Length: 230
Ligand code: URA
Image 1 (cartoon, rainbow, N blue to C red):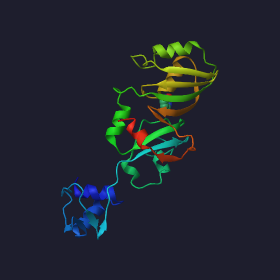
Image 2: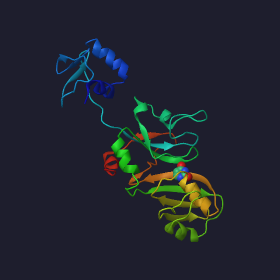
Image 3: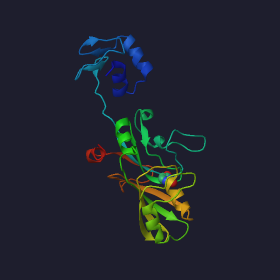
Image 4: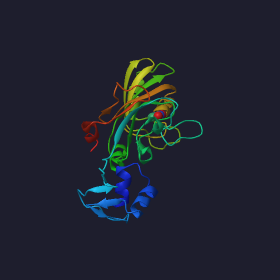
């Protein structure tokens, strides 16, 4: 890895600040002062700033229980970003794997590992996403078969991929889908003439929302959860 990247990834320094320290001769690699950001840091090298040893932070994997009225991207004029809920360094290097609508709650996965999120979200990988859905009108049993076969969404040519519907009560269901089309769950129920009035994501692939997390709380994923995607 380049030395300037190493400095940014192991500290809270911005690129410009790292550059300034390098130019000032404050950075050593295995005891030698290095002034060029493009210098390639050898494997297991000791990098120090003003004598203080740095350690490289590994990639970060986070689950957040998204509350309503937060958006799954950078803040807009109306709502704050879910990233504001993370009280950690370098939040700007993180991205959200699979967004939720502003009024949807539940499991959001956030990482700085692009390959990991790509695997999770890739349309080639069948990754079930389970939602708890509250409906305006009672659901008919025939919806189970309709969703298993696939329904036609407005402005879409192909029908939805087979999905699994479990009816908990006339107006509360669990729906597991493997796609991630825009407003997919809301549009699927709209296709049956119903309306989603509450939407909560409980599970993505093998990763289940930790019930100990209140809305707005987060935790790092366990090794088992991270590896379930690899
Ligand atoms: N489907 C929706 O309609 N909204 C979401 O937030 C997620 C899935």
